[in-house]
Length: 251
Image 1 (cartoon, rainbow, N blue to C red):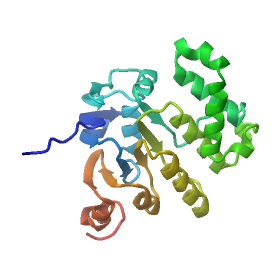
Image 2: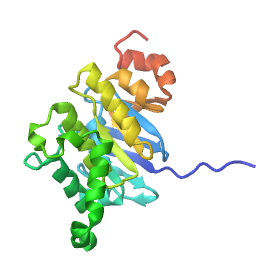
Image 3: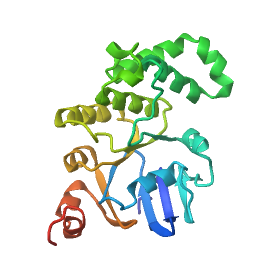
């Protein structure tokens, strides 16, 4: 008896995206199963950020479709896609700089509660309990009252991670979560991601190959808007095409 493959959490089918008259993603097919940690790597201009923009609704498709849990989402607005179950961080952290760390988390929790629950949750002690729980999980308790604009870079990235996670979206898109960090900071960020994202499906853009091979259970290599390779970190490390195109080594 054959075992049926579970339906993917995320599926891109024949995705084609053009910017400035030039194709950035070309006939891209991609599936991510629930619980996977997938890294997307590739040289600059390969289409990695455009891929995230397409999934999160910030860039329209010219052909193809995007599906989340069996529901087509590429025709939805970015807020609708977020509510459908896609969380995201950005290359440049997106937080409320003038608000405290705790208030940033409160705002995210309130936003994800929806309009019907907004007034109730604002008065509910559960809001303070959830805020405290996130401060603890993100190791930001000591910075709870600090304004986000005064945080060091690593703490700012940790806060943005919390904002993306607070909506309990099953799929999380992380765009270069360790970029701009020292080796020690990057290691701490990877520890944090592995700890707080245990029950999430991750799609991560990352240039640091050490981080990729530590974090990901699967790696997709983009080249000129197409999937050049897709496999385990060990497979990708040994792939001659990847060595030639991405690592700059002779095939």
